[in-house]
Image (cartoon, rainbow, N blue to C red; front, side, top):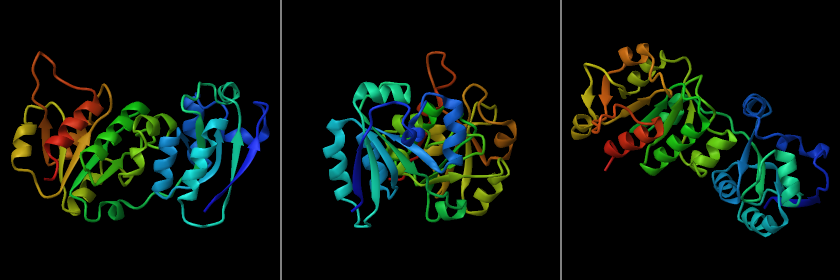
Length: 275
């Protein structure tokens, strides 16, 4: 099993903690984490799911009370004899380092796995989500959680979409970003032709005069279906809608014409789930 190397921390400017400094700075973290090949897992629950998915920590930062939980999680892993630095600090010091109250007292800097090719991720898949240019990390995390909950086989992320492994995305997803295979599809929307060549019917969720209702799609769903959801506010690109096989709308009442993208995703995924 990986062996924890417990190291006490007494000051927030400790040079060993650069991975954890200023985690509330979204622009900084979004730029640095992918380039440094890492992402941050927050809470013992999320860390446990990341470890179960085969991801490995390069270090852990936690409060003393979470040390036994970490030791149990590491003990359950394959015996690879890797030493994991574990920095132990009191909770007020954790807040001084990260810039926020670490509610569940544990963070880990995780090695970021390489993304697989689209064809590999979609092999054998029947239900796929495409998240187009969703820039809000919370919405990405919530949509990924819906993907896991309703049994989607894979998720594709367009080039401008927020990172599913950003700390807030991972936290909102409750670690389910590690359950559903995902990768980036680039270029987009040219990637629609690739989906079609792999046997998928592409369905854009949008308001359009030629749209069909979600009820109609659910009544006779294709064998392989890719549901495409767009960015907050502007929705899907006109070129994406024009290039899709179907345009689908969710029937609504009460004068409401649209939902938050994560809510729309959950409704569409449930309606078209494979029995």
